[in-house]
Length: 229
Image (cartoon, rainbow, N blue to C red; front, side, top):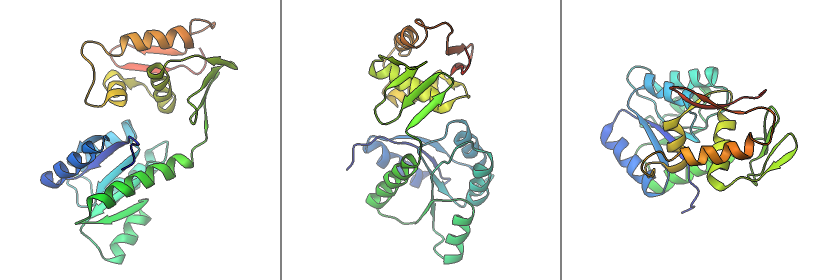
């Protein structure tokens, strides 16, 4: 199995099935968030877009078709959606695709097929992204991880570089501490304050040599990038 690590959001109201899917994905090293209803699931998908959204159709509060339509209308980026459903009629599949789904998997499904489809969707989505990500004077090459500010290369260690990429991909939104910790370490976060030293190192490279600070602390919320410091 590919060692690529994905951030996934599962929206499924069948708790035993949801538990089995989460356990399967965790066993492969992926990070999984979970919602048991459509309303909270849509809120989570918009607040922190995952690499792939696993979406049941028959959900309480907001069904999967309506959720996918609203996600397409409201999200500022394309979130790959894999619909999971027991409805195998062609009309149901077409309705799912018309709502904006990228792929469709009928229950019951094979574990290996679910994993393969998640990886394929994530790679397809990333392949369509621009390699260069720009936020004001900051430029990041997604392929190499190299970053520049005002054309000057930034010599970043691995974790500060990952923090910077997460903040740039979320820009202009603020990322909470818990979101950053989850993004970096999943459920294996080190004790005490795992972000403090890495944020300090990031500021030393990203901001200290320049006239203004791009990395901003939003007190009581988290951190974000300032495009025009």
